[in-house]
Image: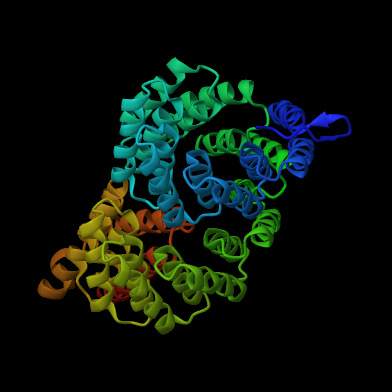
Length: 499
């Protein structure tokens, strides 16, 4: 029974209906004022408490919303909508375990209450319990096969399990029921992106944006797909669109920073990472990539500070441990660098880059045997790592294991294997001289010319590869000096005989 009392000529029921109309128009503040008028007339108007809670939730004022749902539950402890919506508000606050309790309360009262089954699925999904979540989406779909949120939610859970093709089927089911369901278009785009089908993903994001031009997720995700296609300038425009709509959308700042870094615009990238960190100081990836941008600028000490910040937040970030090692390596602090590569390898013993980088640090410390062990570990994980083959060859060369080193160089650079064959022939010539003496093989002018041609060829290759890795240059220079020295000896002996 509604109160006959009026405020400004309207009853509680009329204020309530006016509030609902404004709510449907997205005018949440005005709707709340109307619900307040209804509640002033009738403090026990349970639907007004619930709908006021809904409007507050839509404004992101979840704690206030919870107070309204509590008021409704004081009036009627079996009011299923209030239990469910309180669960939604808690879920939006990230309090998923608590939310599940309230969905369970709703389901005790009404086991066919589809929103609660779906809501529990969402909460479990947000806790990373995707298999369990799928069961609850399935329960919702048993009750209502046209419940699009459950089709979409099941797709999200499958995506998070890496089952992208299956996920797409569920997004398509949602879109069969409601072709204007922007979230399903966006989520289908994400699954396609995860499959590397970026052009198709962009089509889905465009569909989402046709339906809802203010969908920041779709703007951001379109930017990500373009970034993955290497179209960084275009991607930045889409991140900017997301940021026009929501200047506090942390992921768009972060992703824009990544695109700028790919373009070599490191200072601008750092500004974007700083913006992301103003919004969320615990955003580990932003600290990490800010560190990378500083590293790219050669500001290694500052980079280390950022890696440390990332590791405070996420001590299991192997990339941050590894890259802190790299910064220390570039500062010439090889022993310290090794400690950080070891930290990365404690977390992930199959992290090939850390084995490779540890090998480089050991090489620079002159610990060649240990360096080779590390390169071997890297190559066991990634047998096609050219740099690891090359650097293993250098370390073997340092140990005087010439033939083994040449095999490694051949593995590293099969196109130029002929160069390594020439070097091998030079070693054979030198060995022949040492065994049989100068007069046996090199006394004729023809052989001198051959040696000269070999030296010139080797020298040409040395010049050609001057921009290659520093350690590869070192090998060639050592070979050149050794051969020239031997040739000078040879020429001296030949002249004496001619006299």
